[in-house]
Amino acid sequence: MSKPKIAIIGAGPTGLASIKQCIADNLDPVCFEATSYTAGLWRYTEISEENNDPHSSCYNSVVINTSKEIVGELFWQLMLKICKDDRLRFSARAVNLRQNLYPGTWPTGNRMSFSDFPIPKDWPYYLHNKLVSKYFDMYTEKFQLIPHIKFNTTVLNLTMLPDKRWNVRYVTKGKEETEQVFDYVMVCTGHHRYPRLPNYQGMDQFQGKQIHSHFYRVPSDFANKRVVVVGCGNSGMDISVELSGVASQVYVCTRRGTLPWILPRLLRGKPIDHYNTRFYTTWIPSFIKDYFFKRTVKTTIGPSPIPDLDPKTNPSDSHPTLKTNFYDCLSNGTIIVKPNISRLNKDNSIEFLDNTKLENIDAIIYATGYKIEFPFLDSKIVNGGDEVLKMFDEEYRENLVWLYKRMFPPKYPNIAFLGLVQLIGAIFPLSEMQARYITSQITGHISSNPPISEMYKEIQEHQASLQKRYYTSARHTIQGDYFQELDNLAKVLGCYPYSLQTIWKYGINMYWKILFGYRLFGRQSWDGAADAINIYNGCQPSTSKKNH
Ligand SMILES: NC(=O)C1=CN([C@@H]2O[C@H](COP(=O)(O)OP(=O)(O)OC[C@H]3O[C@@H](n4cnc5c(N)ncnc54)[C@H](OP(=O)(O)O)[C@@H]3O)[C@@H](O)[C@H]2O)C=CC1
Image (cartoon, rainbow, N blue to C red; front, top):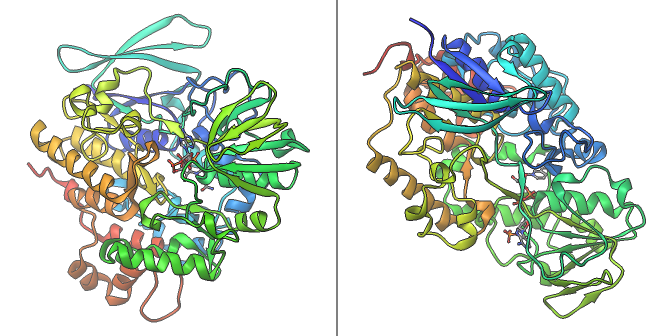
């Protein structure tokens, strides 16, 4: 019997993990990649014809490519300790994804690595984009993924055939459009591709430079300029701090009138996300988490030197913002905070909602986030269509994602979206777990999805919980918690570390580490991932036998 044919769209980290998992499960993957390289937005490129088109898949978001310096600053330190001793030893036991997938990791260091491909021991906590793309090159080479990728190939359209297979229409640069039929489609194009811009009066008249953060590369482009950065997410913070050293003045615009809660990257010398353990995220009520969060901010970088700018919301109401030295720039005046813009003028002045005005602005950088779009697909496949959209607020609706288990559109079989979760944590381990979940379904190792009504109920509950937890914003429609999202899939796949099983096999010390990120006794290390890999290796995967 011929192997099921799987179309994978995008050869970023999620696409690469998907190819590898398909191969491991004896499927036949073909990956379509619009650019000439892998690793997606982690590969730093200059703005060029190839990557300045929002419809190309090679976006180099400021998210990680704000510049060599800033990425260095963001990522260099935080990787060091993570890759210590245990990890290599444990990962050597790795067999294949099905058996060992679940590093229990976070965005830094090995917390962002795939389960059976550890990040080299001597790499730092926070990786420079060069190292991240190198990591993916090593991964691609080790698992021989390149032969499965069609580079410079853009998917134009997907249509479902009467027999529920998918027809993929695509074009490779310099060639004719062509079509191919697949049994299943895995969409791995991510959610940081299409810039989301505000709509201010006079945008078309303003004579200065206006760009989205996605197209920002190096600070020198703004040397001695007066720059307004719109948005206070991680991009807005990173860019404004970076520019503060070269621009003649930087202004940051906040539509909420206040700044977000800003956390430092390191706490007591450890990457701050390492304190976010399974116990902390699962068992601690959010009011206690908020208390610790506020206390951390107050005793490290804050409160803000300008009290009026202190956030009015709770820390858990929004996606976290990490930036160590933003307040330094506020206190020395290199960054000045403004409310939202009311209009832009032809003479390069900008008016704000508090009736103040700035003259002679040279550039505006819109760090206003991203639109979730899949131009090759009917949008109702992803957002549920009008009957679903009408339940949501206008802005939230723009980025609504209506997928069962964050992957499956209830009414459309044989298609799944991977990496479409904005985790508080690294996405790679989840992408890998999702790939594993999908291929396990295709091969019949785990049950297929429940009836549509049940899927709707799950999605509705998930969306309701997001709306309850976060303030309404287009940036909060796909939020997820690292451990919970991974654990939910791990339980079905049979690699979740249940307490008694774990304690029986590995002892209380290891179980403690799985829960709290450090050992109860013995040599301390915060490298929870290493132990987790060991634990998950040890779990008998239910996926080794069909469960239905
Ligand atoms: N160093 C790192 O780790 C970095 C990580 N990232 C990640 O990349 C992702 C994208 O981040 P980012 O690019 O900052 O985008 P976000 O969507 O996270 O933030 C967008 C910001 O723009 C504001 N905004 C949105 N629409 C408007 C509007 N119409 N007018 C005025 N302001 C508006 C939002 O305000 P509001 O809050 O009111 O919605 C918010 O402050 C996030 O997951 C982020 O964590 C990004 C940069 C660096």
